[in-house]
Length: 206
Ligand SMILES: C[S@@+](CC[C@H](N)C(=O)[O-])C[C@H]1O[C@@H](n2cnc3c(N)ncnc32)[C@H](O)[C@@H]1O
Image (tube, rainbow, N blue to C red; front, side, top):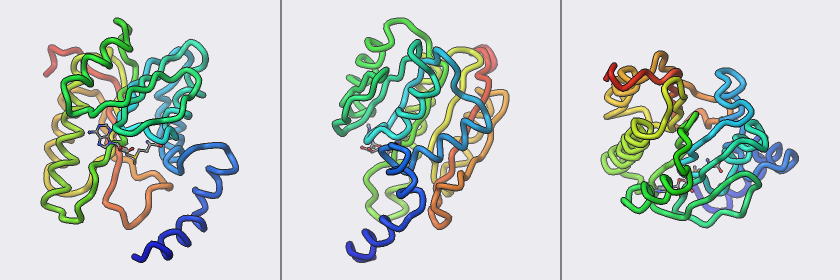
């Protein structure tokens, strides 16, 4: 698609128009709103890890729904403008430094929600992009093993294709309920879906 056609399509997109009107930084906010309206991930005081957070649409939703007593730790390779109640960390989540920065930001508070909207820079070659995306979700699961409290929730953007069944199995071993979500704001022709795990089991169930 040409750049000009992409811009025309983007500016006509109803979710882009709605995000501008509602004050959200990205149309992605409506994906999380739909997931949360259905499964109630957030409540007052929720502690959330938002992976791949920039420009901040998901962090805005999590912060609004967790209130003043909530804590959102937002991680991205890119700089993000500040949001009240959100600690943002500019770090590559695949680097060991990310784990120490996140541990420091949490300061011993266990997480209620781990959510990842991370997407690798797409090369356009499915055999390269698919394993990169799967790897990011596996790392998100690893950090949920360490910091997510029993009973907590997990949401991650995944792409239908090689490796997704492994991710589903991995989540089913860890969560009472695992759901495939294709929110309305997710473009129909995109292979993205959101795997959602509800009710983290005690580690002894692994
Ligand atoms: C689709 S965008 C996220 C949109 C965001 N959820 C929102 O609502 O505004 C995906 C993000 O993942 C980030 N990302 C990709 N790989 C990453 C990595 N290894 N570490 C941290 N962030 C990463 C990208 O920089 C990008 O900002």
